[in-house]
Amino acid sequence: MKIIKTVLEMQSFSEEKRCAGKKIGFVPTMGFLHKGHLSLVKKAREECDIVIVSIFVNPTQFSPSEDFDNYPKDFETDRKLCEAEKVDAIFFPSESEMYNSPQTFVEVNELGRVLCGKSRPSHFRGVTTVVAKLLNITKPHKAYFGQKDFQQFVIVTKMVKDLNFDLKIVGCPIVREEDGLAMSSRNKYLSPDERKQAPALNSSLQTAQETFSSGETDAAKVKGAVTKAIVDAGAKPDYVEIVDASSLKPVKQIEKGNLLAIAAFFGKARLIDNRVFE
Ligand code: PAF
Figure 1 (cartoon, rainbow, N blue to C red):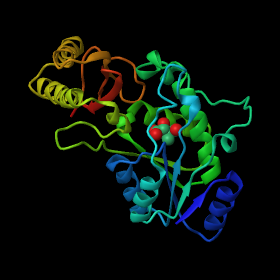
Figure 2 (cartoon, rainbow, N blue to C red):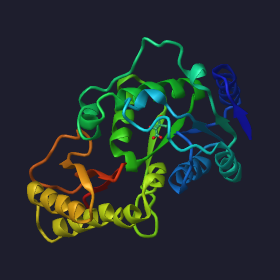
Figure 3 (cartoon, helix red, strand yellow):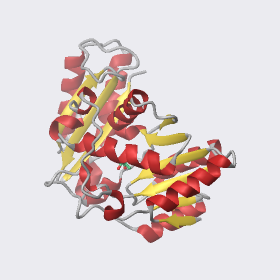
C-alpha cells in the first residue's frame, strides 16, 4: 500500500492505473476511521480494481468556533486499517499541499443552505471545494459517500452532475453501533453519560417510522414527537426536519422516500442522524 503525500504523485499514480484500464474507487475521509468508513472501503474494494482512501482534515469546512484543532487523528491506526482492507493507496496531503491562497470555491447554492447549512453556513462550500479538488487529484471512476451525512451525499451528487464530473457517486447505508448510535468520529467527544443518551437519536427515528407506518402523515406532528424524544433524552436539538430527499425542501405531508434528518447537541458534541421513510 502506498502512502502518497503530493498532488502530483497522486495524479500520476491514478493516471497510470487508468491507462492500464483499471477502475478506480475513491473513499474521501478525514481519518480516525471507523466501521462506517470501512464499509465504504469494502464496497469500493468489491466494485473497483484500485482503491484510494484520502485522509485530510479539511480546514475550510470548519467554522472558527468548531473543532478543527481538536479533531481526532490517529494516522497509524488508519494506515493499519486500510492495509487490512487491501487499500492500494492512501492520499495523505499536508494543508499546504492542498491549499495555496485559493481564490476558487465550489458552492452548491440552495442545497447547502438548509438543514446543517443553517447552523454551519460555510461548511458545505468547504466540503464541495475539497471534494472537487480530491476528485481531480485521485481521478476515480466511482467515489463512495456514507449516507449518515445525507445532505453531503445529495450536495456532492448535485455538484458532480452540475459540473459534469466523469464519475459516479455511490451512497452507502449508515453503519450503527449495536445500540443503534450511528458511527461517527465525533462520538469520541461524548462523555459516558452522553454516550448512553445518544442512541435516542436512532430510537426517535425508528419511532417516527412506526408512527408513519401506522398511518400518521402530518410532518409537524411527527417532528414534534421526535423533538420531544430527543429533549427527553437530555439533548438539545439543532434541527429536526422532514424533507424531500432530493431537493431537501420541507414537506407537510410525509410520503415514502422522504428524509427525516436530525442534528442535536449532546453536551459539546453535535451529532447528526437520519432515516428515509419506508
Ligand atoms: O465526510 C467527510 O469526512 C468529509 O466531509 C469529506 C467528504 C472527506 C470532505 O472533507
